[in-house]
Length: 75
Image (cartoon, rainbow, N blue to C red; front, side, top):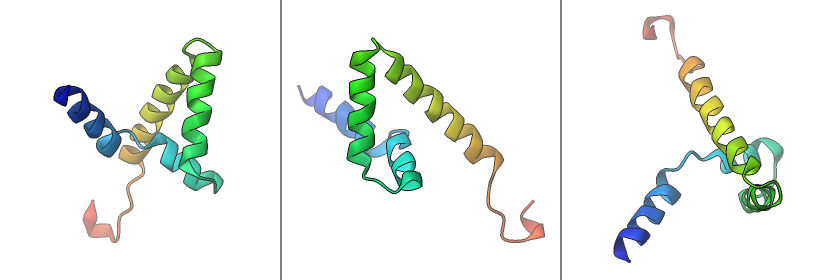
């Protein structure tokens, strides 16, 4: 049982943070976004989870491409 809780804790602390970033962008609580993804997943038989993974992948690529540089010498 400890392995389950350690895995759950790992994903909670170091997850993709998709819900938090969407919530910041929209100006709402992250809990509302998480609940929406959960209901969407159950209602559409997995589409919400697939959408979540797609957004996580897209945000990761966006973070890699668009990095904030403070000066020209940071290239």
